Image (cartoon, rainbow, N blue to C red; front, side):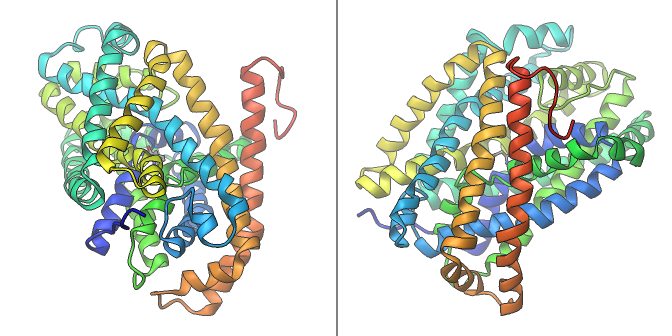
Length: 448
Ligand code: PFF
């Protein structure tokens, strides 16, 4: 059996986990979701979703990982519940499939870093995006992004993941804060903040039934839950670390980055009086911001810095996605890490060819993961920890932590009863929106 690796320090684990959590979801999706769902009013809902649903669910993955000290696929058999292997396997598959399209978007970021230096997107930003988002350029960039990801993971848990996230995560913070200070001086900054944050409780009330599950879904995605990433990362953790304290730190830092990202994005869009795209994560958002960089003084430098932040965010997430399936093959078959990483990376690259050739396919990959696989995996893990292996879970949560048995007991009941309801709601709405998209349903039948 391959020797078990481990983080060199608690901070190393926190940086790696924050690196996984902070990604395109924080910098693209969150600001735009906030702006279009009631501003500060949405942030309240989001905070509730992240702290009351996401945080307890993160502890669920931590408990499985640290107790078993194994990869997510083998963890269940190690704990004496071999029948649950399917839950871990599904999580590993979700990571695998997600990286295939996440890497295509990571490739776009690389293209825009080069474009900031050459000025390629300064003219007609929309046309530029159209010409690079799919096709040969996108495919080449996807290959480069995967190659970097493979290079880091091949170097191992401490030599690759821990070493690089220790640099990337602080850089994200410093550069984002720098950008936030700079945009504060822009002429349209006030209007940008207003658009982003002004609380609109009417908007929230009118769409409450769909906004709440959307916030829950975003909470899972942004915390990298449902991908087994937090299982594998916590399996490399020491027994005297406090899971609730580390989880709390990760959730808080991740939330701060998301809020900060909005404070950067909207002043930039308003400085040029440009149109604000409705939804984030899409090409429209890429286009709008790149268009603004083309018109701002020092836009090339700001654009370069902004896309570097995005690159660090995307890369530190991508390596966690690759680590999940790699850790399984390395530990289970005792193969050499570098060979496994390259092989697995090449397969994921191939799986990423269709989304690199068409943004429509990319959307489908995203939908299947986000709406279907992710909630399913989280639900399975929660049932396992909350109901099937409850004694072991409660015991593991209290290891290395000063929280008392009342916290552990409350967490267990919360995980048993409240979190599953939130997930089932999200899941049903997700299926419904897939059916509507696919033309099976004409209009919502549930919480419409
Ligand atoms: N948390 C990442 C984001 O917000 O962009 C997405 C993600 C990365 C999900 C890595 C899962 C994961 F394993």
